[in-house]
Length: 287
Image (cartoon, rainbow, N blue to C red; front, side, top):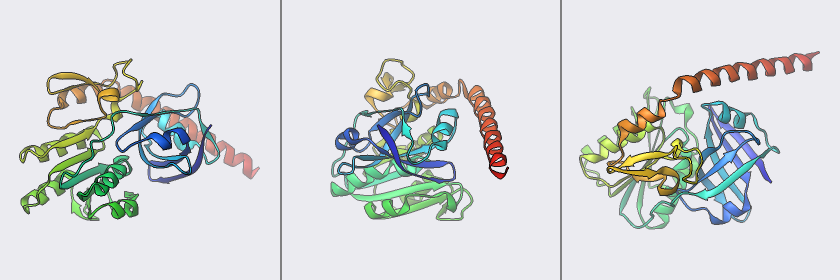
């Protein structure tokens, strides 16, 4: 039912285009889906990065970081996902803010696209900033350029754009007197916190996407519990976007790190098994 019709990879970020007509007709910018590669796979939240209602397809960008995402990375065109549930979450609030800055890293480079597109259609000046360790890790640039008045880059090694991260570009813009009326950020938790701090001093309204901490996606399991402004929220049903200046980042980092060691060990073990299997098949093919 959820056939993969296109698949590509830039380093460990995988673009997966999936047949999902019902979702493609209903999804809005900022929403996500919960996917399962196989019947007994983990449920994974993934931002819907684009969609085509006429073709009945949605575009997902998956960062390969664990067993479940490695399973997805090994799937091919013609394979089908076991389940795709959505659209889920509250859509981004889109209106004419004025100047909107969007920042994306890793899977967030793809994830910010529909928000940038919707903001542009609403009459905003859109400035998109994307970050990577070095220039060859960027992707989806052409699409972002089409919906952005400016596309700025940040690289850890300085090979393209500003040497640093998204927040370093934001600081540069503010020092140059650039007015920012609204900010959206999507990427790893560390990036979201740093970017929120960059906009805090100028009281720039800031939304951060916290869909990476979800599991169930319906508000039942409590895994996505997060403190925002002193209140308990659930990212899957109250978010995924929250005020970055109100998130309790210390609590969030602590919760996300609880099983980091076990997750890393299992992923490395599974990766070695996959490599051994691949080598075995290659030897069989060579006879």
